[in-house]
Image (cartoon, rainbow, N blue to C red; front, side, top):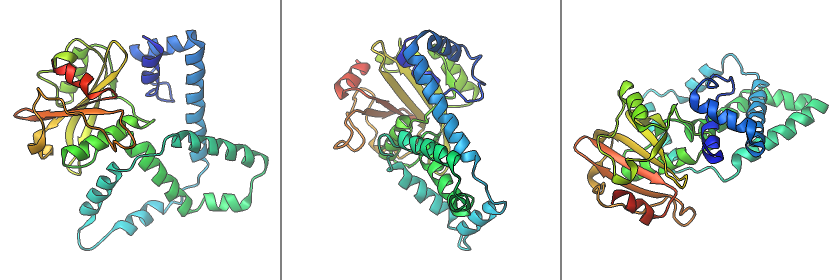
Length: 299
């Protein structure tokens, strides 16, 4: 295991240490104790996560907050579901600015030190208000929950593609299961009654696995799967699988034709994406590589 893969795995390490006995996490943690640079990176990650959790724990949530929020969204015309669908679809096109996570955590650390020196009654009063709590909840949901979560928005291939890239680029993205054996990952997916590949492009068959994740598609939350593979050059290739019924598959390309696409190409040209479908399932292959490199996976 190299440092890059160890970092990829340790990004999913839960703060309570519940993953310490997992073989992949154990190997990555052992490497972090031996490699000074990796160890320092892990220490910074844990410190930042702890600071964020501590900052949230200082907020006093009013007892009637849940009822107040739900009352705000209630309507007599039964359009709550349509609103939710539109909201999720809009979030699919939202991309957090680069460095946002570090900026938020740095700001929280500065505020923590300032408050420790001199607590301002005015600040404490604002922080304990429902407005402050709702604002924090919104930030957590959009950037820490939705972006790195398991729900991919949309009902068209393009919408799902954009949403998948948002998820993969999130600093809070994590996998549900890690293993370098493809067979073990597929067995886990089948045990959860999730889509698993019956046939793979030639270039993926002999790659080592990284991990997998349960996904849900659109407002109907159709079950879907994510499997991540690692190439010899340490590129990570991501395969999203779902039932065809979750999408309008008319525009999906054939398996023998990799199409180079990217999200907001004028701003981000790192992602190559190709799509295909069989009789029952739709597939999206995503990776930070050139379209020609992705096309070679099908040869």
